[in-house]
Structures are given as structure tokens and as C-alpha cells.
Amino acid sequence: MTTREVTFDSIEEVKKFVNQVEQYPQDVDVCCGSCMVDGKSILGILSLGIRKKLNVVIHDCRENQKTGTVLAAGRLL
Image 1: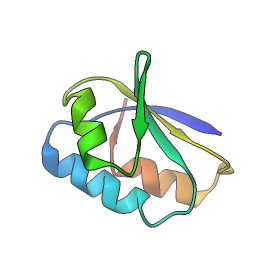
Image 2 (image 1 turned 90 degrees about the horizontal axis):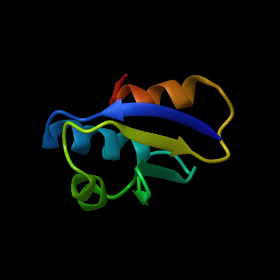
Image 3 (image 1 turned 90 degrees about the vertical axis):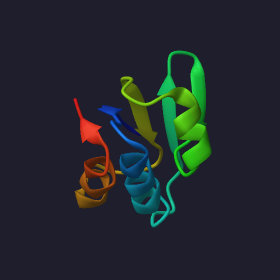
Image 4 (image 1 turned 60 degrees about the vertical axis):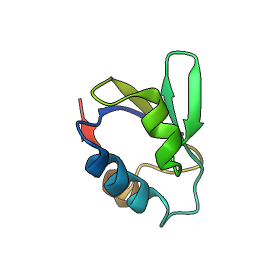
């Protein structure tokens, strides 16, 4: 499991992130406090808010190039 902190400054950034995440079989969650949504859901991520620090959790993913590609779609903090 890999966890990183990200922030999205626009709806376009969220769309780009979701499009990248949908290409991988791993489960991806996005969390803000005690709220957790599916990382493959544009509406779910938008419900957490834009310009907030969010945690992206990629399950069953080894530290490799795919993790970097997925997380590059969101701006790492």
C-alpha cells in the first residue's frame, strides 16, 4: 500500500487524475479526514473538495513506475 498527500486545484486536474487511475487494476482511495471515496470516481473526489490536502492510497501496489505515473496526475505536496 502506498500513500501520498495531493491537492487538486481544478476540476481538470481531478479529471486527469481519474483518467490515469482508471488505467490500473489496483484499488485507489482518496481520503480527507474520516471520509474516504473511490479514487476512480470524479464525483467522489469532487465531493471532498478542491484545494484541500487529500491522501491518495493505492492498494496492492509495489513501489514502482506505475505508482509515480498515477500520483503525477495529482500535485504532490
